[in-house]
Length: 483
Image 1: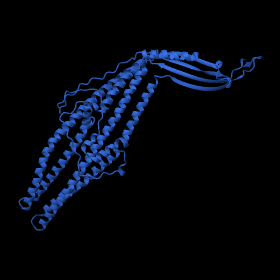
Image 2 (image 1 turned 90 degrees about the vertical axis):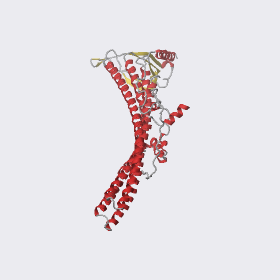
Image 3 (image 1 turned 135 degrees about the vertical axis):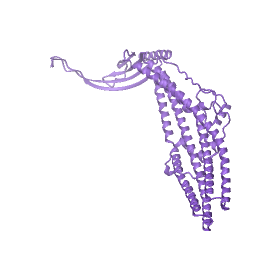
Image 4 (image 1 turned 90 degrees about the horizontal axis):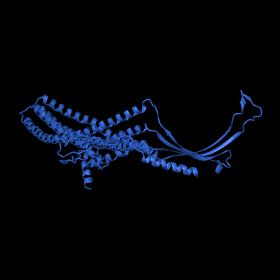
C-alpha cells in the first residue's frame, strides 16, 4: 500500500504543478481587417464581428417556390459524395482532438511475462573451472502495472489541444462551406435547365409560325405573286430555327447529368421532365443586415486556421524547455505461479524522468520560424477570403441591379419587335415590301424573346450567387436577431 500511496501523492503534486504552469507562446488575437464602411450597392454600415457560421441559414432555396427544386436540394446532404468526404474529414479532426486531450491523463498499461533461462557457467579461456557446477535453469513469472504521466508545465499539451480544437472547428466550417457551395451549384444548374426548357418551347412555337409563313409564301409563289427567292428565305429561316431547337438538347442533357451527379445518382438513371414554369425571382430588401457576411463558413474556417497556427507556435516554443514525466510500476515476480501474487513477491518502482534537448543544430529554431510563417500565411489567406467575400456581394448586388434595369428595356424591345413583325407581315401580304423585311423582323423578334429569357436566367443565377455570398437566406438571420 505504501507504493500506491507514494504513486498517488506524486501524481497529485505534479498535477498541481502542471495546472500552475505557464503556457508559452502567443495568446490568440483575431487579426484585424479594414473593411469598407458601406457596400457600394447598399447604404448600410458594415462591421466585422465574430464568425457566426453556426447561425441557422434556413432552407434558402425554398425562396424560389419550386417544389421539384426543393426535393433535389434536400438530397445533396444525403447522397453527394463530396459532402460525405468533408464529413469524414471533420470526424478525423474530432478524433485528433480526442488524441490531444487524452494526453492530459496518465497512461496505464499491464503485462504478464513468463521466462525460462539459464545463466552462463564460470569459464577460464573457454575451459570450465572444476568445482563450479552448471547454473540452474530458472523460471520467472511477472505481473506488472505501469503508469506514466507528463506534466504540462509549459503548456505544450494545452497548446496542442487548442490547435486541434481550432482545426476541428475549421473542418466543421469546411463541411458547411462544401454543403452551401454544392447546394448553390445545384440550384444554378437547375435554373439553367429550366431556362433551356422555356427557350426550346419558344423555338418550337416559332417553328410552327415559320411553317405557316413558309406555306403562305409557297402559295403566293405558286400563284405567281412572289419569286422563288421568298420561298428559299422562308425555308432557310424555318430550318435554322429547327436546328437551334435541336442544339438546345445538348445543353439540357449536360445540365441534367450534372444535377444527377450533384445528388449522388448515376446520370443514366436520372430524368427531369421539361416544364415551362420558371422559379420565382426573389426580391431582396434595400438594406441587407451587415452581419450576414459573418455567417459565411469559408471565412469562419480561415479565421479558425489562424488560431490553430497560432497555437502551434506555442507547441514549438514549449520544446525549448525540459519535459517532466513521472513513471511508476508495481506488480509481482516469482519463479512459481502458485505463490506469484503474495506480499513477499511484490516489486515496485517510481521516479521522475526529466529530459531536455541540449543541442539540435537549430532544428527547433527552424521549426519555430516555420510555424510563424504558417501563421502569417493563414492571416493573409483569411484577409484575402474576407476581401473576396466583399467582392462577391458587390458583384451580385450590382448584377441584380443592372439586370433589373436591362429587363425593363428588353421588355420594351420585345414588344416593339412583335409589333414590327405584324406590320411587315401585313405590308408583305399587301405587296409593299419584300419578304426579306419579314424575315428580318421575325429574326429580331425571336432574338428579343431569347434575350428576355436569358436575362431572367441571369437574374436567377445572380440571386443564388448573392444568397451564397451572404451565407444563406437573410430572412433566417432576421428571425434570429428578433428572438
